[in-house]
Length: 194
Image (cartoon, rainbow, N blue to C red; front, side):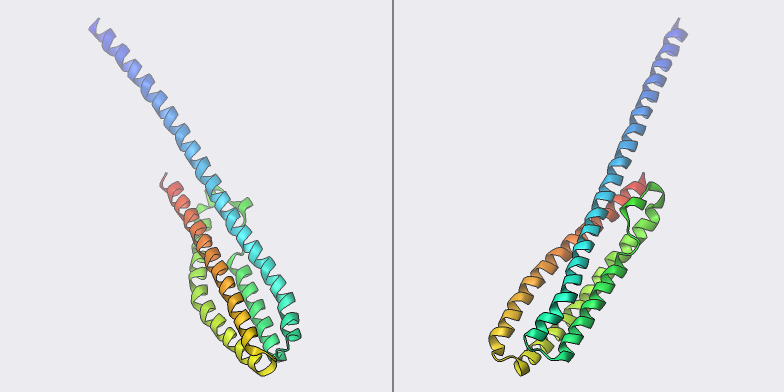
C-alpha cells in the first residue's frame, strides 16, 4: 500500500515536471520569437535611417553644386563639395551593405552580429573623420565666400546657422543609430545565451 502511494506521488511529480518542461519550452520559443522580432524591427529602423541618409545625400549631390555656383562660389569649391558629398554617400552605402531584414534568421545571428558590429565600428570612426572634414570644408566655404560673395558676413553667418542645425540633426541621428545598433547586438547576445 505504501509503495502504491509513493508510486502515485512519483507519477504525479513526473507529470508536473513534464508539464513544467513543456511550459518552459514554450516560453523559450516565445522569447526567441520576440527577440527575433525585436532584431528585425531594429534592423528595419537602421535601414530606414540609411535610406533617409541616401535620399538626403542624393538631394545634396544634385542641389548643392547648383546652389553654390549660383551664389557665386568658385568652380573648385563647387567641385570639391561635390566630391566630398559623393564620398560621404559612397561610405554610407558601403557601411550598410548586405544588411537585409529578409535574410535575418536564428541560423545567421553570428554573421548578423558581425555585420552590425562592423557598422558600429565604422560609425565610431566616421565621427572622427567627418568632424575635421566638415570643419575644413566650412573654412573653405567661408574663405571662398569672402572672395566671391558681395556680402560675405551675412552669408557666412547663414552658413553657420545652417551648419549648426545640420549638426544637431546629425548628432541626434547618430545617437539614435548607435542606440538601435546596441539594441540589435544586445538582442543577439540574449538569443545566443539561450
